[in-house]
Image 1 (cartoon, rainbow, N blue to C red):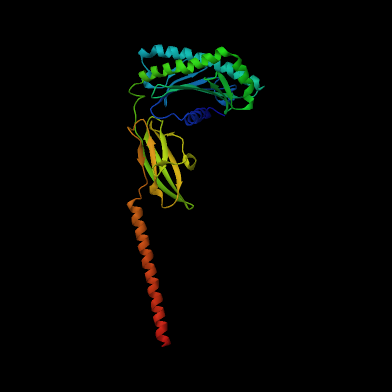
Image 2 (image 1 turned 135 degrees about the vertical axis):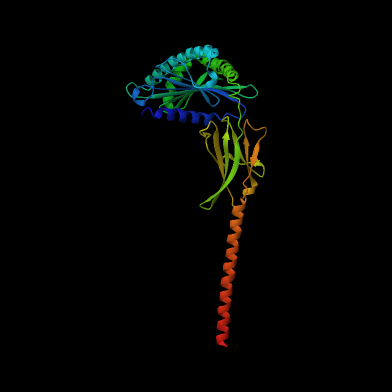
Length: 337
């Protein structure tokens, strides 16, 4: 895996995380993504970190430079020098912890010579009612590995290979309490600080443009609800039938993806019985909307006109052939007489 694969790996981790967390509208989050490789042939340093407030990348750090670097205009300036000093010290601590954890996991797998990767995501969310939720997950070689549970101060193993590390880390009760303190106290405080710093930028809200399209393929009728050009990224989309929610398993949803201009897009599709399209409504919730937005499929005038023209031509053709058949029968009757 070469250097070109690095941005793609981080991007996939971010998308996977956003989809898994399902951040609801009118909430804020602080996320740190850590990644490293034991060998250089993966195109990664031993440790690299990216920090996000909501959907905005604001800081980057790697093991070689050992300093925090700005990735957003709203955190620049001499007035924020204290912030960067604190971030650098904090990320240096994460750097050391990451490497120690990396070697621990490799030793517990008896991996000493092969090249491996470790991925970590940690952070917190603050809801509109000021309630908080923390998350701390490890991935090893691209697979879910361990997840910290702050309520019980233990680790949840995502695979059997992680059990040895789980038991080893759970012996250290001091570390578990420090982890919980970070998720429940330090992280929300830092998030509020960053939100104040980015006021006017991070709190901008662009409501989505919503439309419903109609598709027919292989005798299957599908309605697709598209939400375009919205910011921030957190959005909720659902289908209603006769104003009642449709079972989620019947709908096909797409991850929220960047549009390329700083906004985002997403869609949700639903297979419906032909002729019942008007019974279905797409409902969208987003921080930029004062109330949920609904949209239905409206047959276009051109489609109606084309259908009418085709029907008219079909009727004319039928009448024409009936006339010919009638004339043939009259001629045969006349000749027989």
